[in-house]
Length: 556
Image (cartoon, helix red, strand yellow):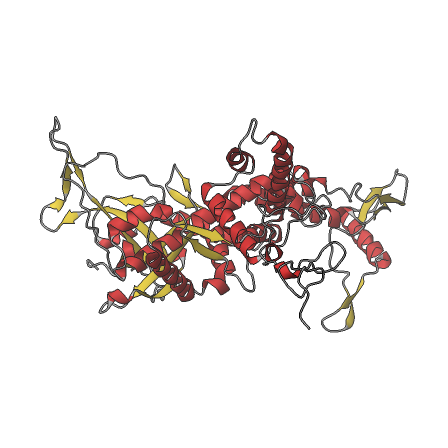
């Protein structure tokens, strides 16, 4: 157990010995810090954090099965991951990457290879849903140990319930913890160095006593792709799911619905109250007399759907039965009154309130509740609710967080195949972006409306071009075109003019038609012999002796 499983990618950039800090790295991924040594001591948590995380994951998965919660989750997943028949849900974007075209083609090829290994195009919906519900995602990168330069051979999913991210002090077998001293300090304070790894607990069979043995496998950090939701409980250092805020709201909705059903079942029917006059009979005989009257007037024949028989259920008493009360001598005698049923049984205002509260806790607009009549309008963007704008930004943050999984896999693939170095990846990582397939009607409406407003403003400013504004100012400030877009658009316009798709703006204008003249007609050579006079006759050549009117007549 002392040896770690998996592979490790060494970084050639070594930190200076003087670069030592007493503050440990930030705990943004919910890493558990353990001080004690030993494998089994690392796995068993005294404070019960691991048990709590296990219970939280079970709670999240139970919540995802609730109809209202499942509907909200599907809205989020459908907005984030768009499955199309022809296009991939995610593509890599290398426009901002300062690299050669050959390197970019290699990166695109390796990214496509990773998607094929994961079968992401087909399983994208399930993968994103599991990550959203659990709040974390683990993948094991399997390589050929004899030929690591072949890259990742297989990517296997790991259940988060069986995986643990651990940070531990580095220890020497002889001298204990390996210190990292701060030089030139006043008291020569020493701080232990830490190492990170993962602990995987495979499924274990129960022993003869019914318990389970806690055994696991240590896996190196580079062998695991680890993607979290980014939500961390700062008090316990536990990774939370986006469903965590909805735990209370969902429990309240469940209780309200159950109480409503119980109230309606108990208060819906009208029941009767029988006051039976027992006179001066003793208590025992009075009870016997009351039971005889009850059995005489009660008729409770029920149909058994399992056997197809009609049976008598008089011996059973439920809360929906009539009430039989004895009355002594001196009362008003035998009397029958009616107990009215519950009022306002159709009021479900509280149910609708807790449904809206549940959707708000899940960051989903209330207008998306199933059966709601006020859905967002597909008209102008100003008519769309602000909740839809917040929801679109929330989905964008989810996509950016989820894309970190592909960055880690792509880094491992490129380093194993010796395409780049670790130093190159640190400079390239921030410039590699991921383009998700978008299918949000609100974004499309917003973009089209903004373009319409810009074109209207450009038309208004056209008379002032050359006096107060320049063409470059109009294209950059009003139309919001970048330098790259301006160059690309100009090249496209020149190409379309050459192909004849667009007319040449520099061509002369025909005064008769007002349209640009055809360049072919302008360049056609004119035959001087074909030019005729206004009367339609060909002019005579005065040098020709045979022409009419010449001074010399032809000889006979």
